Amino acid sequence: MKKHWKLGLLCIVIFLTGALYMNIGFPWDYLKMKDDFNKHLTQYETEMTLKDIRYDFLHDEYHGKAHPKNNPDLQFHIGQNQRTGEIEDDYKFERIRLKANQEVSAILERYLPQRIKPASEIEVVAFDTKALEINVLTKKVVDAQTKEKIKQSIIEIGYLPEQLFFETKSRE
Image (cartoon, rainbow, N blue to C red; front, side, top):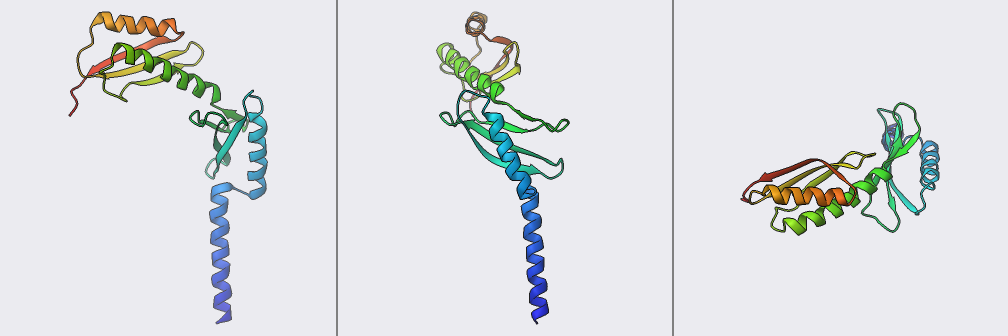
C-alpha cells in the first residue's frame, strides 16, 4: 500500500514539473529572461510594466507583453527573435498604430459621424512612411468629394493613406 502511495506521489510531482516547464521553462531561465526583458525596456524614456511572460516550448524561446506604466492601453509584444535569440519589442510600432487609430478615427468621426462603428479598422502597413490601410464601413455611399477631404486630412496629420477603402452596408 505504501509503495502505491509513493508511486502516485511521484507521478503527481513529475506531472506538475512537466506542466511548469511547459509554461515557464526552467525557473532560472525564466527569471533570467524576465530580468533581460526588464533591462531591454529601460531603453525607453517612460517606465514600463512587464507581464504575461510565457515560454514557447516548441521554439525554446520566451515572449511576453508590456505597456507603459501610465498607459495600459498601449500593450505591445516583447520576446526573443526566433532566428537570433535577441530581444525585440513592438513598442514603437504599437505606439504609432494607437496614435494613428485615434487621429484617423477623429477625422472619420468629423466627416462620417453616421458610419458603422467600430468597423473602421486602421492598420500601419509601412512603419517608416507611416502608410496606413483604412477600412471604413458606412450605411450610405460616400461621395468622391468627402473621400478626398478625408484623404487630405489624413495626409495633413502626417500619415499616408496608402489603402483607403469605403464599403457600404446596411446594418441588420
